[in-house]
Amino acid sequence: MSSKISVVSARERTPLDPSITPDQINRLVESFYGKIRKHETLGPIFLKEMGEDWSEHLHKMKHFWASVLLKTGTYKGKPVPAHVRIEGINTGHFHDWMNLFEEEVHAIFTPEAAPLLLATAQRIAQSLWFAMLADPFSNPPARFGCA
Ligand code: HEM
Image (cartoon, rainbow, N blue to C red; front, side, top):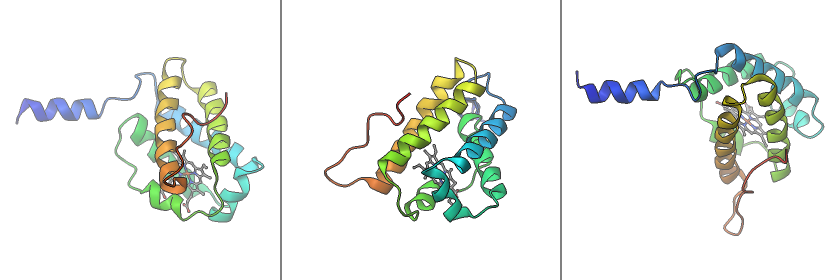
């Protein structure tokens, strides 16, 4: 076994921050989507796409965030195709999404972990924005949300 390979894979498994736990991720997903459901502009979009039963989506999102934050590798989906087919999304929806997400992250994660997590979410949001809304004459906002 080459030592180089084990060093690389150990780094790949390193959590974004050592304080982040699976329980925090589960709470984040449950509370964030609980608020999305009631949100004036985002709620109807999710309800139209997923109907009333969100259990499968929440399960998927727990694996998504565990893969991003704890490097579990348990999320196997493709976010870009899942989003590009959703109709009626604009830049304002991204700001709304991020504002809600920021609130939940600050309520659940440590002051050290929260900014790292939010910077990661911003990067993913920007790549989704590019896939869904970019045209040759526009750039994404430097950051989503206004908090
Ligand atoms: C305007 C903001 C957003 C809206 C309206 C939105 C809406 C949705 C909807 C309706 C789905 C379900 C699609 C389906 O299963 O039929 C979905 C899936 C998903 N969303 Fe978003 N989303 C937004 C932003 C984000 C951001 C910023 C992230 C990550 C930081 C994200 C991550 C995901 C992931 C990982 C999935 C699951 C994709 C899959 O594997 O099927 N979304 N989103």
